[in-house]
Structures are given as C-alpha cells and as structure tokens.
Length: 288
Image (cartoon, rainbow, N blue to C red):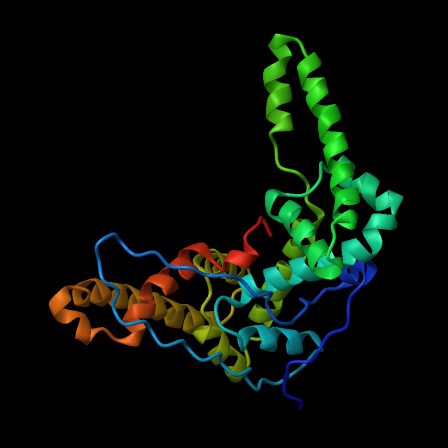
C-alpha cells in the first residue's frame, strides 16, 4: 500500500475543477501578519516560530487521499487551508477561461457576481498572474453592470414595494468561487470521516488544529454518519481546546513584569492559537 506524499499539481481548468470530487492540495498562498502592543507596555520575549510539521505518512486508498494527507501535514486548520487553496486554484482557472467565455460571464452576472472576499480575490489573482487587471476588470464589469440594473430597478419601485426590492438587492451574490470551495470542503469532510476506521488516519485527524467552525461542521457530519472512531477524534479535539484555555490563562498570569521570565513558547503562542481557533485562517475567509 502506498503512502501519501506532497505532489506538485499542474494548473487545473474550470471544467476539471467542476468535475472534481476530491479536494485539491497544495501550498497556501503567503499572508502577512502583524502584531499590536498595548500602549506603555513592554513586549515580552517573542515566541520561537513553530516548525512546519512534516506531511504524515498515511495509507492511500484513492488518489484524493494524497491531497488530504498533504493538508493534514501542514500547520493550522486543514479545512481552512483547503478553502484557501481551492479558492486560489478556481480564481486562476476563471482568469484563464472565464474571461473569454460569454456563457460564464452571463451566469456570473445572473448570480450577481462575487462575494466580497472573492471580488478582491479575483483582482489579486489577476495581478499576481499578469501584473495587470484586465481579466478581473472584464469579470467584475459583468457583475457591476447587472447590479446597476438591479439598483435602478429598486429606485423605480413605488415606496410600498421598495423595502422588498431593497432587501433582495442587499442579499448575497451567488458567488461561483464560494460554490466551488463549498463543494471541495464537503468532499474533504466526507473523505476525512471515511478514513476514521484506519488507526493512522484517525490519529492524524485527532491531532489536527481545526478551527471551531470546521470542527463543528465535521462533528455535525459525523453525527449524520456514525463512526466508532469519531469519539477518539472528538476527545482529542476537546483536550486541545482545554489546553489552549490553560495556556491563555498562564500567558495572562505570567505577563506581569515580575513573572515574564516564566513565559513558555506555548503560552506566547496561545493568543495566536485562540484567534485561529475562533477565526480560522485569514486567507480562507468567505462563505465556503
């Protein structure tokens, strides 16, 4: 039986992306981070960076297991990383194919464009690919033109019917990137649960740093698909969060001037870990 590794994946077309039942793997796009200090307070010693975990060696039953093992081998929430990766790949594919596809542009307009995250994302992706923004401009123009017609329709409504028209206009767009990302996420959750019968997979999933939203989604899916291995995963996840609470308390206690020398690296990382638990990975934000 083969073990999962981290393959280099070629550029994926929109058609291939739509046909995928397994999540795409690959590295996260780089993000910037910054920190803030309370006025008048001296910073404590900086936490040493945590080493990037090695990709686990896991038994492979299907080709999709390779990408899933790659996600589990990285730092942070694996499903957040999947959303960021799937979003980036689909945006790249849109810029290669969707720009010159009148049918896609029509569907994009009918769906009222992109969500806020992916409206910025398509522009960022275009500039990263080409150094310009022509492709993004063409796609965004299709959406903006439709929204302008919608707004003019609201303005033309009589006052008694305007409230309903305003509510409809304020509704979220049927973002095609969010839809693609949601499909990849559902496929990954299904595959994670299907692998719980294997001890190696179960142990790796149990130690993964899922954000709270993704942990709850995984839990809800596990409730619909009972598995003897889920209780072990859930117990480990609850212990991880309890450890985080303890490290946060210790960080606060040891942050006074006379106790800073007692701070451990784990305690210094606790605020960042808490933000990731509650907010997920910044690059993955969106409705997917």
